[in-house]
Image 1 (cartoon, rainbow, N blue to C red):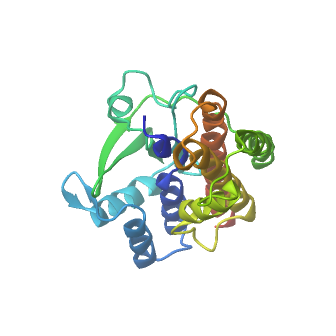
Image 2 (cartoon, rainbow, N blue to C red):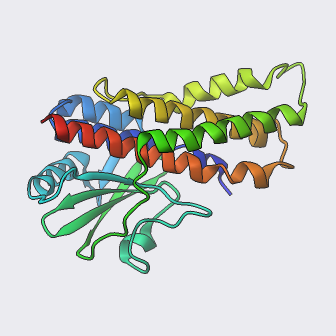
Length: 247
């Protein structure tokens, strides 16, 4: 199992950048630079990523409901918000998917992260299952509780070596990794706070399971994954709604 794929989400930042671009807060050049930082080269069924962006804009302009961009993450204990058995759900990887709402349909964009990012596009006429729709405050509270629990579990390991005298130093360096390449400056403070806290918990989990090599707490730590994913989705929803509300 790829632990990092469960706790790290380049798709989170991708969703915010695309929303900021759609609503006029970021130019195309800045979006393309951000996408390159989020996985390298991007292609859409063999076509340049710019073609996919044009199609996203075309679809979004037909939307009868707002906001139009949504992040879908899933994993153990958390089903994907897509119709069961659909082509989009079959194509899902651990990375998740983006949904762009159009007129009478939802367009599901599924990335495959490897040496480059390859996108696939699916159209769903059936209304997608509703997510939890937690408010930023509710998601933050759940993640705050998860943070306290994760930190307590790190302390219980009692892990000390000359390389990692203090496990929290590694947590800090990993948090810096998760934050790269950053978010648009226009992102809401509420969303940025949720993302930062999610990155912090993810870094703690990686410190224990990968850098400290302690898997005795895996069942407890893995239970935190759902809170991380939920916070990332709630943060994207808040940022996108704010972009839409301000236009």
